[in-house]
Image 1: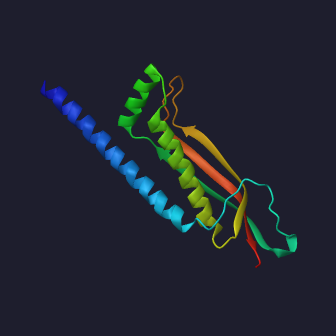
Image 2: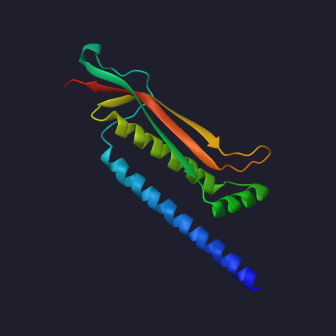
Image 3: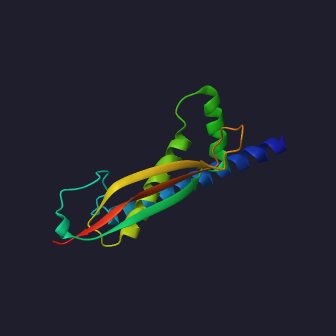
Length: 149
């Protein structure tokens, strides 16, 4: 009986710490997004900017590898059995994409706009024959343009 209580206590502690870390990461992302809000990142291949006004163009990229904690992975496995949305993996994907975009914007420096933005995702650490995702990598890339006023 004591072993069960210890197991459930550790499970609850791990879930709580993982939730706290995820909320902390979301808070960090939101704060950093506020500082880069004036740098648009668009999927258009080109914008209506005359070529003679473009001062510089460079490839920029950002990459993030995010993992879901072990305890949320257990809950996601249970959700896979019964069906429905797997919220822990949805938040994992959201955090990875947003973090990759932020890192790309940070690399752009004093650019005016980032065009032709693409985001690629890949599961990392998937064992053959198993469907559980270990980590998720998101990579954002685009062309940063600096335009004369």
